[in-house]
Structure formats: structure tokens, C-alpha cells
Image (cartoon, rainbow, N blue to C red):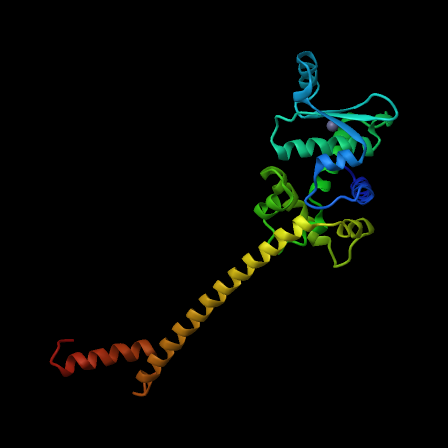
Length: 250
Ligand SMILES: [Zn+2]
């Protein structure tokens, strides 16, 4: 389900606001984010049998539960892959931040789409993807700790973002760029070295090609001393002359 452009912008603004407020860094630690948002989270594995069955019936990933005004609880399935658990946590934080429990006029589909987008954007925001020296599904996946599927989605969105990007960042993008990113920077350095190595190998290949061309050219020059135009014709004629000189048959 697609939301309108204005809603996407609002959600990105909310993501940036809460990330800054909680002093988060990249790669984003979803557990820590929930903790700093003062959301209590309870893994399914800590639930008793009946509660576990009830929780699984509610959602295989996780759900949000506002018991009272002072605390929000996120129940999440900790048997899922880590990437998926992170997304579930962020998804539930999204429901909380976007005030979905007190907006009865929004349909469940809209709320779900909003929370999903919140999670995906928080995990891999476009201005941070833009810092990667090599942007592929693979590098996005590694840099931000995403599943393959989520990384493909992020790459797709990044390419769309890049088409619109004119070198200036929005306010919320600047906020995101102001966050600490020690872990991400370490990976960026690794990618820089990798990219450099690639370009050195590329330059070497170019040099070899160039040398080969030089060799070909100089061979041509020797032959062209005999006054012929095409190097290939020259060589053929030269060989023919050699053969006939030694009594070969044409
Ligand atoms: Zn949801």
C-alpha cells in the first residue's frame, strides 16, 4: 500500500526527531532505541505457555500494548531472525510514535503501512546510504543489518531518492547526518579500500591494454617502413614475399 508524499515526509521527520532525541547512532540498535524511548519490550520466550500461544495468535512478529499511560509494552518474537526482530521492534515503535492508538479515524491498513515505512526508514535512511562508496543490495544489507529483501527495497528507494536529490539535504536529513555513526564509518572505510583496490586493478588492466596497443603499433611501424598502408595487408604481403623468396608456392 502506498501513502501520499506528505505522509512519507512527515514520517521521515518523526524518525529523525526521535533518533536525535534518543541520541541514537548507526548502525541502529533497535533494542536500545526502544529502551531509550522508554518502551518496555518483552520477548515471547519469556512468556508462559498460554500467553505465548495468545501472543503468536496476535502476531508472529510482535505487537504493541499500551497497558496504562506511563508505559508501553512491545511484545516481540525473539525466535525470528535478528534482522526481522529489529524491524518488528522499530515497526512497533512506529505505531507508538505515530500515535496510532489514539487515531481511530485511520484505517488499520494505513497504520500498518505507516509503521512499516517508519521501521524501514529508521533502519536505513537515504542520506546515510548515500555515504556508502559502493551502493549495492549487498553493501546496504551489511551496512545497516538488513534482510536481503529489506536491502533490495532500500536500494530501490535510494535510487528514486537519488534522482530527486540536488545536493541539498532537507532538515530531517541533516538531523540524521548529525547522528553518530562510528560503526557505519568503519564499514565505509572498508568499502573505500575495496573501491580503491578495484580502481587500481582497473588502472592496471588499462595500462596493460595500452602497452599491448603500443606493441601492436610499433610492429605496424616496422612493416609500414616498406610503404604499405594497412598493417595487416603489410604483414600478409611480407609473409608472402618471404615464402616466394624461399621458393614457396602461393
Ligand atoms: Zn503493526
